[in-house]
Amino acid sequence: MRIMYLTESMGWSGGAQQVLWMVGALQKRGHEVLLACQPGSDILQRARAIGIPTEAVRMRQDYDVPAAGRVVQLLKKHKSHVLHAQHSTAHAIGLMAVWWVRPPVFAVTRRVVFPLKKNIFSRLKYLSKRINGYVAISAAVKEELAKAGIGPSRIEIIPSVMNQVLGSPQDRADLRQELNLSLEWPVITNVANYADFKGQDFLVQAAAEVIKRFPNAQFLFAGRDTEKLKPLVERMGLRADVRLAGFRTDIPRLLAASDIFVLPSLQEAAGTALREAMAAGLACIGTRVGGIPESIAHEETGLLVPPADAHALAEAIIGLLEHPQKTRTLAARGRAFVLENFSLEAAATKMEQFYKRLLPHPNPLPTGEGAARAGEA
Image (tube, rainbow, N blue to C red; front, side):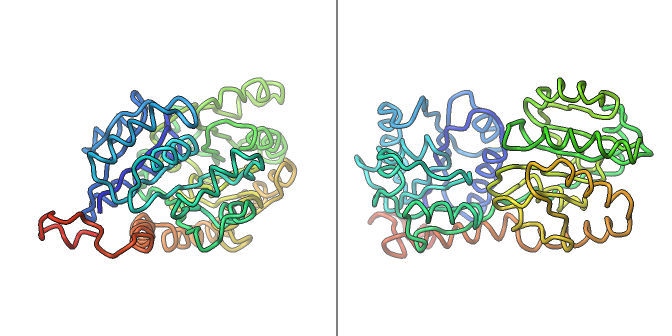
């Protein structure tokens, strides 16, 4: 198959990482994948560095007519069988493009769990018959799409996957030294770009409560804009106990330096960072929102607490610190669960089957293309 991925992502994020992993996996399976993305974007640079074919498309806003025209040119040049929009603006621009030139399949991925807006523009965008199918990254996302009126049969759940690259004991020592964290005391970590709905403020409040019971506990926040937590950290008197590491690309090293991972989100479509932490062998705590319970079964593969509840977060962390054997058991079960259910190979297989199901006939290659390529779809 010839597949074109379209994303407006500029900065690096979990969603951008998922796109790059999937493009690479499909490419290894013999498909011709073209990544169309913003000029100057992180994903463009990273894709080119690992040999993924790319084209720059400036996407300023939803329904950007010049951007849609550029996508039309690329669809014709690439002779794409599938156009797959990966984010919201790409969705709108792709929808415009397929009114001018229609590939066999136009698919859209939904990566957030926010309810869809109910205005006419949103309805036109999401309920268009030009969209052959949706990919939801969790059951919670599929539920929101179905609530908006999209038939469940048009929605395929293909979960976000995690990175199975593990840090080493040396990484653990080196990173703790770099961030001035003690090698002897536990580190409780959150990895997420700062946002109100990520719930990091509640984790800082919980840290103050934990420190009263375990004065040597250390907290690490990594992600873009986590420095915005600094005023709260200082107000809570936690300057010596909390590290704000900012944006990092060495996530396996961060996880190797950690003992417990906490994802305190108020809304979360899937929680890829949580799955990475589970794969790294950390005991994990999450909130009962969105797709997080699809990774954590309470008291089986981790712990679940209510959202926006600093005290519940603190009690869960304290419980793990007080019972190291339970912590090790949850970590082992969690790791086994995510490795079995959220591998890139399994997700790539599902994506391939999703495209084949949507194609109008099993071999969509235009007449005249060589027989050597006839079986690639």
